[in-house]
Image (cartoon, rainbow, N blue to C red; front, side, top):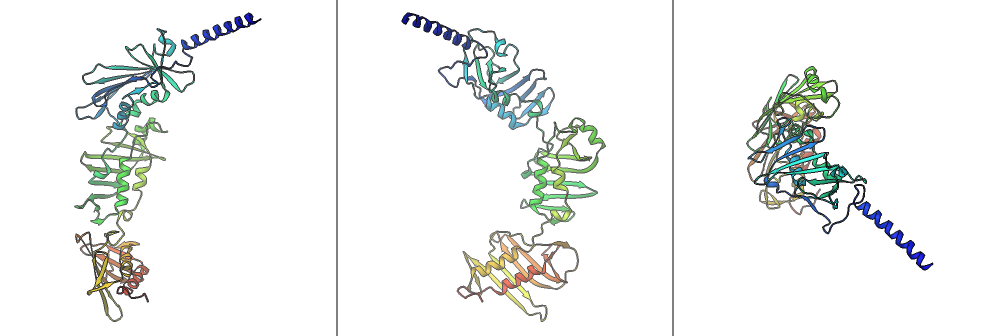
Length: 445
């Protein structure tokens, strides 16, 4: 009995050994481990890569070349600008490409791994190096890995499935889909023609936006930055509904806006049209083709002129002024009160007396918060408030006069034609704050 049991155990052991041998040499098995848990499939020097060709089975290969200036360009199947970051990501994913395991195929037919006719091929050209061809075959039975090898190297590897996906970029994924390539922060001028009106935004000597036409007017920098950001974000929608008939839809669409951008990269123009609920655009960057785009640029321009104007009366914003000269006139008897406040460190002084800092800050806050409800061109009469605020280490001097106009007030900045319509409550708040300015140590009444 003891001998019979041992014989049965030997038969079982031999059977298990056969199964393990078969599973280790069959495609649908778990690949065997190697001493190196992360074998290197391919390693390149990113700086020396000059060309990449990606061939997906059944699709025309995409070839990229790097210029002497280090700029990537798509050269096949047609000449197109490349998305620089996407190409850099592809190169980065190859330096190195690590596998999971090496398959001990012992000369097995590559058909077993889908590598006899690879589903994806990458040809990588490096300066002063021989070109390398990376091949991807089928996915493993579990689906979370794929078979790969380098042409000329007999080893077969498994790599993570996402490695294959990340490197198998299509033409649309590799091309630069921007219709305006200028950096928003480097745009110096934006000309917008929309609805029969032309608005020209330009940067002044301080680098801030202003409205040069019509105008000149002070601009709301955040609103104009929104237009610049929207322009840089206009991209071709190559897969959305209507994208296949973009040229026809553009031709039949109603003109929405024409925008010209001036920047160090040159002058770029984009024309936007609306067809039903979709927007289409052509740009000098992308040649003669029209493209479906999202509504972001239309949304940023769908505003009246006044929405792009700066409604705050003062520009010192949250900078701390060094001097505030304020005169309030009583409209009944023309009697006036004046405060000439000067900062020294964290202290405020008036006529040689140290003042309560909080009471002075209340005046500054009231001036800072003066904001127009709308704009006017006429109606300014005799001013009842005159103020000068000096900030930015003396480089910004703002003189403002304020006059009563019915139930509201009009503010006028020196050397500007614009009149800012102010709510009466804001002016009463300024008067109240000024009248409460007091010496340091004196209690608030």
